[in-house]
Amino acid sequence: PPPHILSHEPNIRPQQQHPFGKLVVTIIRGVNLKAGQGVFGRADPYVRVKIGDKALFTNPHKSGGKNPEWNEEFEFEMTTE
Image: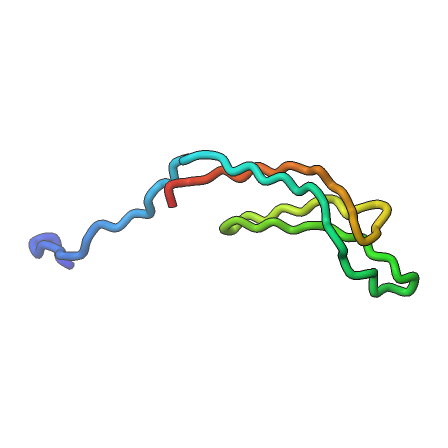
């Protein structure tokens, strides 16, 4: 609007996200997973963890199998939103 007319539109700015805390997720193992569907019937299992927009993956388990163990830890920074 022209400078002599007051605008009634609110001044909206994106709020800055402030750290609220930390979430620690430990992936220990898989239990009784299905066998691989590949040519050799072996899988390379992995775990995907998604919190909000952030996704993290374990390394594929080298031996495959139905009961893989990872013992991997992931940290997610939590914000006020």
